[in-house]
Image: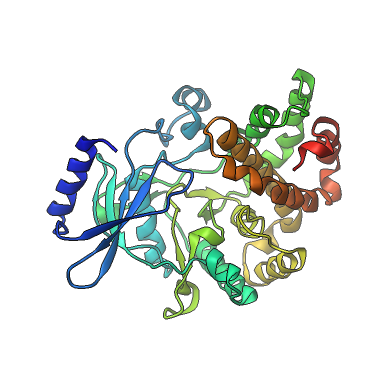
Length: 363
């Protein structure tokens, strides 16, 4: 961190009336953000988010495919590029929907800084590792997801904070961008993988009908990274608000199966077939959207796409970014992919993977 950035952060905190807070760094993730916990003289706590404006541009609402390709990966994938206004706008909508996101107390969009409510450290992941009731937490996560998906959402968010953030559709181009990370980066990590021009053309053709289904079903608010490390247990709250949410700035309008896949195909912890089937059925019983779609088939198809995307992202994190810890998650993702590929509708995708990704590369 540069001295200039440090001075800017100090000035921001003073301007927010928090100059006397004691600051302690928090563990980061795979993003360009960093966090600190603020300890105030009155004994209360806040979270301080630092998101330097270093990423490629977010996707303008009106951008066509050519413009998105020119702008780069964030625009192609319809990611928020770490924008603080995205975080603030989405947090406000989630709270108004009766869900629990950190309430924002101060922010500076241009500098990429924000101070927010501290929802605590009671993340689902560590709680589950310590033996918490798995069914209780996952059922609560399903209930929060159903609330999130059943609440009407405008095309633009953030008006109450003086912002104007578009909720873009997770469309075919964005979905294809995610799927294509696997053939781009897995061969760099696993030399046994052989994907020539013909195989790449087949890969794109295999996904085309699934992309169309994903875009056609894009009808609900989608957190996009809805898994146990981004959910916080808040037992003193009621109903869906017991599930605190973070890391939601990349939210889009998407097919309802996407967040269900993120929850039940969790890269960082094993979700057993029995729990996955139970929670999927619970979602089908409680969601008013599931009956309007061939949901189980879409869950498998879009789940397979999501898993392939994550495998590619982890390969990229290891090879390009020098983050070897993500390699340990790959066997789990291949296991989830095998579950999805058991769907007869994905037989051709299974044949492609068998031909191009040998068993020894799926580890």
